[in-house]
Amino acid sequence: MSIQIKAAGPAAAYGTLGLYWTFAGHGFPFGRDDPRNGTSVLRTLDPAVIAPIFAGMLLITAVLLLIMHGSGSQERHPSHEYRSELPLPAGHPTRAARLAMLGWCWAVVVALAIVVPDTRLLTLAGYLPILIVGAPFGWPPIDYGIVFNWQHANQVVCLALGLLVALAVLRWQRRTAGACEACGRDDRAGGWTTPGAAARWGRWATGVAAAVPAFYAVVRLAWAAGIPFGISDEFLAEMQRTGMVWAGLGLGAFALAGAVLTLGLVQRWGEVFPRWMIGLAGKRVPIRLATVPATFVALAVTAASLGLYSEPELYTSELSLAHIPQLAWPLWGAALGAATYAYHLRRRPACRDCGRGLVRSREPQAY
Image 1 (cartoon, one colour):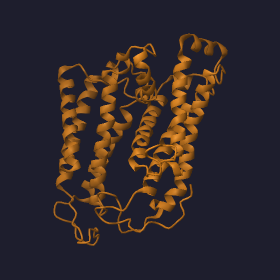
Image 2: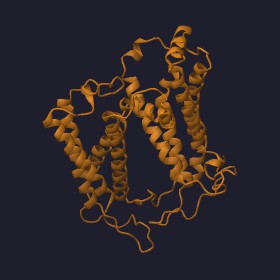
Image 3: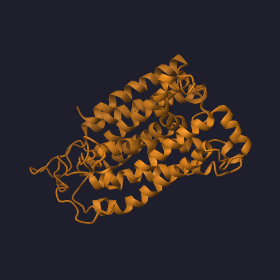
Image 4: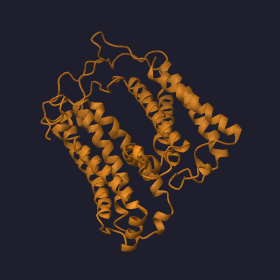
């Protein structure tokens, strides 16, 4: 079963659920009916309007994915290399149709993976370790029904569906461009995608992607230490009284750990497990062990950025050092995405489908 078929099924199912929300008149998890939508880009939208749009968007995408499955098949050379000089096979879409299909599907991916989620998804990821560890001890004293609710579940579903559709569309895009469907390589020179080039620009992206959460962590850890960094003494005392300062400590620790792990994208220990990791020492780190969580964080941060910048209070409140780390979230998301892609380009093996990449670049890959 092709990836386009696998993506079309969930898209159609979720689109059908959107039709139910449309005709039932209730249950739609986004828009004005969301009780905690203060950081959502969709918070002012009427569910009666957006629910049918949501349903139609996904159902059309499912149809397009089925069309992609049956079009643009690529002939292969006996040596498993794609031959760009071969004529386009029957059923290959026209240039205009291809661009239209790609434009629609990538817009849907952005909507599902970035527009629908908001800061709550990033906050949930930050608090999740604390919630898991503290649950048996009844700490933190919160209602878990507020954290694990219908709206959060649908944000996770939309993000996962967006990634699945993205993978299906990306493979079809490569196929119809004459590149390898699996790895994206073609017969042209690699340029900035070579391992050596990715090592160079990836270091800059990684530095930025680690600096932003580190600054965020410093501010939150300062509050936990009783230092009113960027806030008033009165507000710090209020946070200490209500326990908010400890929640900030958890988020700060999560951000600091993320900054350190981000540095692993350009460090030796990000490719080979260090000696102190008993049972794993000396073994190569699986590429996806680094790229999958980093991609999730990059998308969650970017989505949170949209919600943050859509809040009217942001433009009326007084700017302080407490806000600057959050204002840099768009830079964090973009830099982390670029750093993750550079790590993938630098470490990806030779392709099993097309055979490209057997001769690796001899350019130095400085760490």
